[in-house]
Amino acid sequence: MILELGLAKVIAVGGCLVSSIALIAGIAGGGHYAAAKAEPGRLKSAVCAYTDRKSSHPLKASRLSARLHLTPAQVRNARTIIETAEKLGLPPRAAVIGLATAWQESGLSSAAVGDHGQAFGIFQQHPQYGWGTRAQVSTAAYASKAFFSRLATVDGWTRKPLTVVAQAIQRSATPNAYAKHETRAKRLFAALTRSGAPKKPTDTVQLSSADFRAVRNSLEMATALGVSRATVVADIQEALNAGKLPSVRRTGKTSDLAEKVFKTVAEKLCQELTQRIDEALDPAALAALQTSGRGSVALAAAFKMIGVPYSWGGGGPNGPSYGTAQGAGINGFDCSGLSEYAWAKAGVRIGSDTSAQWRAGVRVRRSQLKPGDLIFFATNPKDASTIHHVVMNIDGRRYIHAPSTGSRVRVDTWTSYREAEYAGAVRPG
Image (cartoon, rainbow, N blue to C red):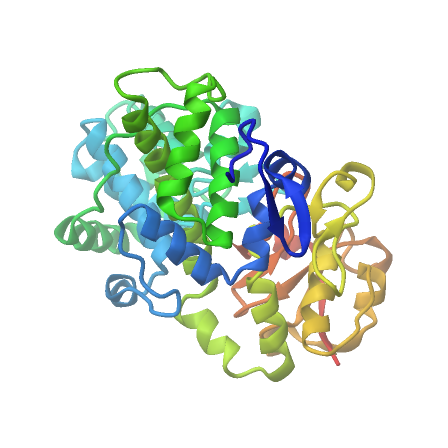
């Protein structure tokens, strides 16, 4: 048995014998450790295969996203905006306003962070102004619904110029910036409504956050270890019979319910892994990986750690590790731990903290950035002693990093907040 659901069989993992409970609860945050040790594309393909969905190789970009000159993640977020407007019974004009606004605010990136770390998601919504929690507004579906809920309160919005409506909702410091995206938004809307939206999962169930995490972590681990779909479903059924998933409403046969629980979690995990891989391995990133020597090796190593938890003081040349202070119970990376690990894979020692890494190579101009270069951010960009964060450049527009406690290694885009704190860049070796 594989699940952290009260089962007591012993299995071998990485040369260590642990009980099924210890496997999930005690090793590196459960399945995230397995995900970190696996090739991300292979893990994605295996999880999506569980859902009976076709999963393309991560190195092959979708024809639609290439034609639109967008990443697959941007296309998914655009579709979510359109679908949300449709569900709320709003006319196409609303979707166009939403697309233009999201393009201006975040470049259609759910991972975007701005306004000195206070605004998040595709619409750069502020939790302190009642938009929702950071986790909520960083989700495209929630953020879109929140945006359209406020759009509907703008008097005469169907007759007003796009930029006026967007500004009434967003209260931006650059109120006229939305207009320049209107034509692009209309074209994107037309392209996506012609191509159709992906099918939504059916026969799913509602789970509490705790129950969802338990099954998700176990599914990640089972996938990385090659456990069959039938075995995982059987374990969920046994857990249901033992009352280990209390939030699941008991209806019909337990075997059928176990299938629904499995599908609910597997569909969501497939979507999340697909987004992570598509963001990291789009055509621009792949081109960068082929042209930058040691930097390419370092960047490829960092990509394999996408999804590993942030751990204050965690990580080093050998991979994720338990951190200190708030990271003491988390096996993962902090920002400098990730860059140290990645560059160690390229055969270069750069030190374990941002101070050492700032001195670990040659300075490079912003215009001369190459894949894998280290980019540093500081409270006072003119004072190196105030450097507080390091990331790895992908293509001059995006970077990979371990952001902060509660997050995971991910790809982000440059924001005005980061621009203001840019201290410089270093090429190790």
